[in-house]
Length: 289
Image 1 (cartoon, rainbow, N blue to C red):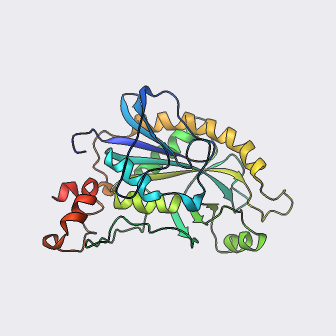
Image 2 (tube, one colour):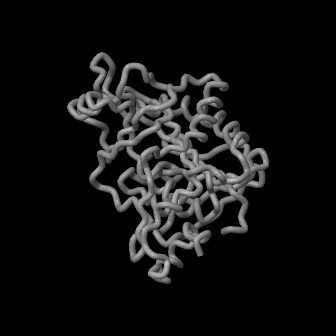
C-alpha cells in the first residue's frame, strides 16, 4: 500500500452511481478484514490524479442504509492509499433556508442511530480514541465550497447533519424534534463514514445534496421516494461538475492534520499490540510499524 500514490476517493450516494471523465478506467474487487465493500471500486485517473469511486448502496441501489458495511467501504479505500474522501449523499432539509437542490457542506454530525455495527476499526487488543471535535476536513471543505459556487450551485458552508437509521423517512414528530434541536439536514449514511475516515487518517468532506424538506414543512407534500429522485437527478449532475474541479485542487502530498490523526489516538503500548490485530489493521498502522 505504501508504494501506491496518495489517492482521492469518492463515495457516491443516491443518484450518483458513477463518475465520468476517468482515464484508463477499470473496476477492481477489494477484500478487507471486515468483509466486502458495497460494490466493485472504479479506478482511473482524473486530471492525472488517481481516483477511486465506490457507489455506497451498490450499483442499482441494492443496499439499505442499515445494511451498509461502512468499515469495509472505508478500509477498502484506505488500503488503496486514499487520503482524501469526497462523500456525496442526499439529505432532507430541516430549515427553511436549505431548499431542494441546494448543497450543504456540514461541519458537524449528530448520531441518532440505533441499528448500526461498530463504527471503529480498533479493538482486539489495540485501543484508539481519535479526536472528532471537528469531523470534517476544513481545507477540503473550503475547496469544495469554492468549487461548488464557481459552477453556479447554491452552497451553504457549515451546519449539522443528523444521522438517522432509515430506511423510512421521518415522522412529523421526529422532524419537528430535529428542527427544534437546531439540526440543519438529515440523512442516513454520512456519520459513520466521517468517524471511520478519521480513524483511517483520511481527510473527509460530505457533500450533502438537498432533495426535500423532510416532512416538517406542512405546506409542502411530505417527502416521498419519487420527490427525492426528481431532485436527485439534478443534484447528481451538479456533483459530476464539482468532483473533477475539487480533485484538481487537492495537493499531492497528504500532510494535513487529518493525515496524522492516529498520532495522539493510539493508547495501547505498542509492545502489547497483538500480531494478529496488527496484521489485520496493517493498512492503518503501517507507518507505526
